[in-house]
Image (cartoon, rainbow, N blue to C red; front, side, top):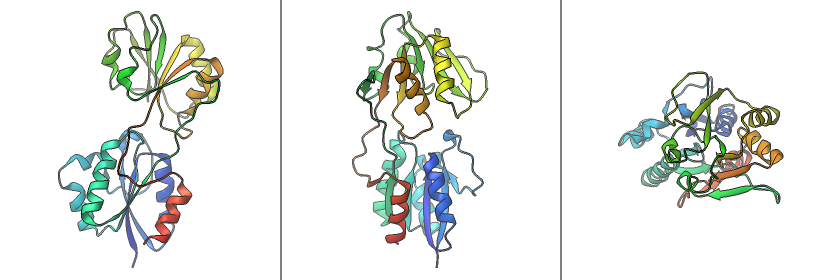
Length: 246
């Protein structure tokens, strides 16, 4: 009988884990996808990660589908999903591991300031700076008092929207972005400060490399603390855990 595994996918590595496990005949894989991640897949999707906000949704799904293991490969900053999974897995006596890729580390000459949250960034940005924000549109109101600065906010896709900051402008595009592209963009916009979350991996790292090459100040937002999650940080090790713990 196949072992039933639920994988929550908010990263490319989550998709890789699902692909590897679905190739094996002894596993039946169920997938919850984070639609905010814009990950494209041909897998059948059993649900959306956002559904976990509904009371009793996850326990009911686990019981109904006789899930035996959960792999949480949600976004590194999705603390809520991980906390829900840890709690429910313990209550339902289901095996659980959190996959999270290694965070970025600064090199000796990098001009980084690591911050616990986006809230701290406002007091550090120098007056008159041109700031590139790669953390999304959430929280832009925190910069509303910095009227001498100009803010450029990366938005994926080409849907034109009004920026909530009077001195802000959305910069549209679709990944992947090369380091050459990001350097050219930063030069064109005369960027002084980059604000970015420490998501790790390769997807957003070109911006960090561009800032490194141009000696731009990087305000690196640190990951939220996860107190109870048992973590594995490589695809190989998570697959090994699955094979040896069923």
